Length: 391
Image (cartoon, rainbow, N blue to C red; front, side, top):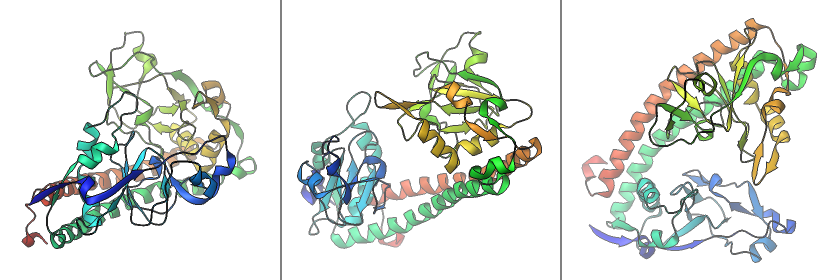
């Protein structure tokens, strides 16, 4: 099988950002992608759009439907496929496949298989990055176009199975939202339904995490803001470690049932909240606040509210921009008004959450198996081992 470079099989470029001080550059027009808009699939919408003036007065370039996008900063290797005419920020490279050399779906799957290798090429400190030069020089195995299309079709089918499992997981998040409303009613109507109070009325302690520097070794794995998801769960990947003195262990560690709140982050991420649903010994970092409720309240109820659409809207309205970040401190968090429904109803809600999370764990185990099989299939496909008998 012959090998070429990505620069030989596609035409490459990158985008740009017009001046934020010119309001007329942003608005109705061409969707303008940032890395958070990429989804490893077809992209049809973006959070922002550029007007014709915005495109004209920046290095952003409009690209046609079918163009491939590759993140070069932060989430290196994250992908997207333009579902319509679009433009991008400078953090995203775009590739227009040359059809005489490479099938677009084959190129997409090859780039997907190279993500970890591309990430390892990243340079820089806080936000690692690669450049267009890295991408253009990247080797790609190049069988015949007929064989490329056959390999792409096989990987498309396998990837569709992964997508179905992920959609099932996403539906569980919608189920939790709907179940919260059915259990407690619309928060906008709470003053008519329940006694009202504040989050501070429901807690017995509110504590900031450790400001000690974490690293690759230490007695305690530490939860940081990246370990809290936007949907209200903890992810225990990419943990760092630190040591705690005996007197700091009670203050800076968590136990099952605690609620963690991300007090400082970018404006769209500040306020992430998650209940600790594990007995693994864990510390927590200074950008997080730990809440423990009184016996008459549950953290699952608080988490349900803070992760509801109403709760997130309240948190967005409280953000205070500080050097590009937003902050909600413990005093402000405790002042948030909230309904105070009976303990029995809160406990019933906790049981519903436990049942949904059990189903989520089952689906995640299945997804892990499918992901491993897909990775193996990718490896075989691009090493020439995927014979016709596999189709």
